Length: 603
Image: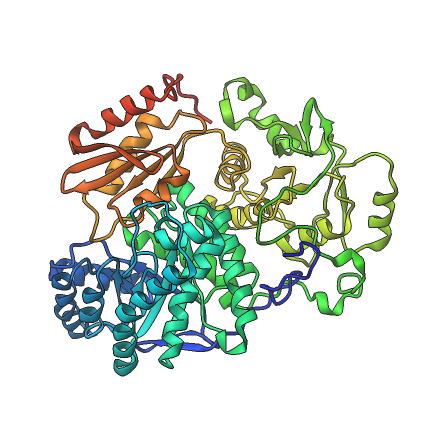
């Protein structure tokens, strides 16, 4: 794709405009069309345990969840959805139920009798995932598609007859061997996998479906969704299906929320997304307020700065052209400069700024702050603050002979993402950019949970676009917490790796061990390993695939038994759960990536 061409996935890159889609009904809840962005989640109980499942569904509905998903591993599990649905309705709860299907077409056919929506994964619904390397001729590829047509069409027809909805949900970690061998482990492969199933649905005049393109890496997830929407637009106006957003295996705590805000928030800001699920390795009810907070600005139609009425912003001249490829990450090519002894710009480390006031507040303990220390004081950096719509200011900067650190001035009637995109489009790329999380810094104390999501969305989204050479977080007032937030955003966006990175799935009925306690135990033992990526997976659905980006994996293989992976290769099998964390540490040692933990430092 031409990186200088206008974005084909986004209605308007410089102001919010929601993508127009057709309406898809999930029971009595509408997706897309003129409906608000819907919030959904997934229960964790064993699907055969009716009382536990009903209790979880009711608790999620009470928390504000609008659609609830339940795993259905086999036809036997799927059959109990009848009892769950009956008891949920008897409790006067009308929240739509979704069956989550992997591997078993017969389970999908059974589940469709009892629930309002079926989620199928094209990577493992009647397809193979054995990591086999082979070349598929066109004839062999067509033969495989015909086999899938035979397996998938009965479900399509049943959903059409019963008025059920469907999600065609591609996961980066579970692409089939056929797709992997032709397209690779890529966003393109993810899109092609979903489009194949969508074409089969359309062959039967079935259109009550949505798409998803989930990945644990926010960059991959963002690129895959953008490419999907661009491909749908190319297919024609009647391919305007709603989109389900999510970062899969986001993890827990602050890290899980930051990853979710970067991936989901970035796409929502571009008008993409009709329903969202925040996947946290925590009790499912904790996902709901996070998802609601991400969706709220768009459901409330918050004004984003009326660029259409501002001639300085809405000019059609060359300065508004794209400066990056939205479908393939590449960092903006700024020049290297030195500020307060730190090199930034070019391919140098993305630096962390703070204000003079906050520097003063932590000055006495900077030497002991470890990886969360401030590096540059904004007021002493010489940064130039401009309104990127001011043609005279931009022109003057671009005439300067030497590269200059630049940022957006506070107080503008622009959303942060749009403001910095305008800046990146108009300012000569040799000038490094300092990103801010807000253009309206608060005064006094702030709520950290409220500051975290917009900071992650704004800074993380821009970093994933390749924009930004330094960051300044001001939405959180506490000096230490604002610095930690800045570093954690850089880590989640893949811009600066300074600690262990975890890929941890949310629990579900397939999970073979306690994910929450196990994840915390693994964090406690390995959290000091800089740059090591560890995947913690409850089962094999996405485990091996999502672990392609991980160094080591801890995966449920059977009840109370753990398999350990190096990359996507299983190397230790059926380890008793009580021994598995120690064996994981041994495995990390064997591969030369273990170091002893330093003394802890409080920030």
